Image (cartoon, rainbow, N blue to C red; front, top):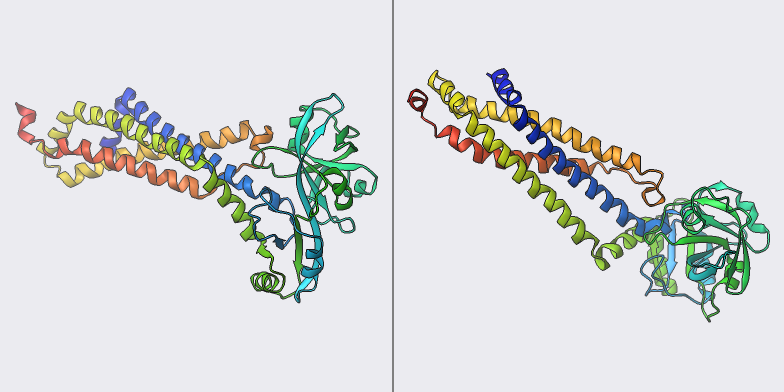
Length: 378
């Protein structure tokens, strides 16, 4: 009987491919938009992820993220270093600045000053150059996405000169980083050099990056730092989460992506529901004949379930495959760098497909279950 159900489904090619298209399109829309949403909001934590050595971030109590911060007095560094359980603590400066390129173009960039001695705060890997180039005066390292945005793809930026706050800066390295949410170019330099590049204010220490002593619980250490210094301290995961929450709470991204995902579900219900109903209506005589020869309603339900399962599995697979191919096709675009498909997103799409098929199958089956076998012979 199940083989008959499959032959009935594939026998009507137009409706069969229509069902596949509806499921595949809905899966693609839900999976693709969900994937972009997750990866996009995670860019709010890129500042934390690009400083892999940092275990604890200490900041002014009003600071919220790496980009939304308030500077502290330089004495905060010594206060943090005096807290028991702190293995090391280094200064970290983050500030926005305007830069003028050799061609005269004005660009907005983020200046990041890392510790002069240890260079803690730099990304782990560099595409070009080495971390030692920061020992050269007036040296900056630019992130790979910022290099493309400022100079164009395929341009060798090593040796390019910039003007920062009437100071000269020379690019001598390209860092492999996770792009920021705003795709602003990021320039890394030593902390002492960064003080010359950013506008002079009384307090310019943005963060203190801390490493915990061996065996020290990070959460316990953050509480101790807050109690003894009056500053706010967060673990790496907590501070990364704060950056993500800031994007979710202060932008319209969740609503916009949520509407798109909902539309994908509605479109799937509409296309699949209409096509499935037409399929059932066109085959109502066949179902009636099966009931006339003794096939029960339970077996008919199983037949329709097999048909829905076949369409759903193929369409779902095509939709997920389409999302993977989309990300692979745009992997060279700096905006999509590092994008991945979280395992939860295909699972959500699978649940959506099951709901679409369950809803449409339920309403389509009503006419079959209510069909009298005798009507076939009238």
